[in-house]
Image (cartoon, rainbow, N blue to C red; front, side, top):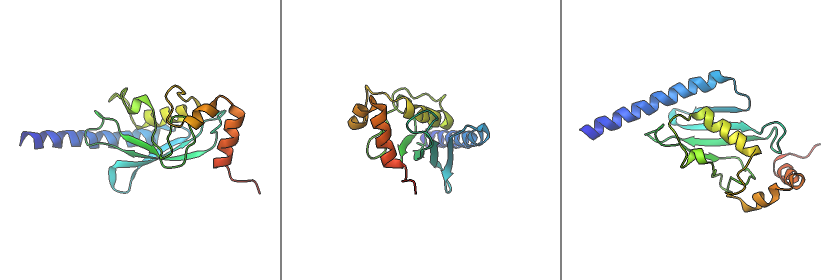
Length: 158
């Protein structure tokens, strides 16, 4: 009985927190990031990040999935790129190597913080901890890296 009650309280805390974060994100007006629950499930969100100005990813739109555990915000969400992302800290299936989504998680972080951190990571990768070695090796030559990104993401001009 006690465990059922405890689970119910944690679940309701998570639900209220996510509803609050959704409203805060919608009101924030942050450029280049957005996220909304998928259909009727507040624990599964779809997010969008647009590459920041003055980076090789400028203007490129990326779709993300965010899956929140029942004990959120005490545990981090699982976040993955759904759009192909050629990046040193993103593997071929969209997994992201970002400390705040792993061992540096804090319940003070929210969806907005996560999206802004990933947007920042695009332009400032952690080369010492790559998930994509090819991207990490190419990163030092920004001209070649830009060509690879353009080849992968930009449609040819008509």
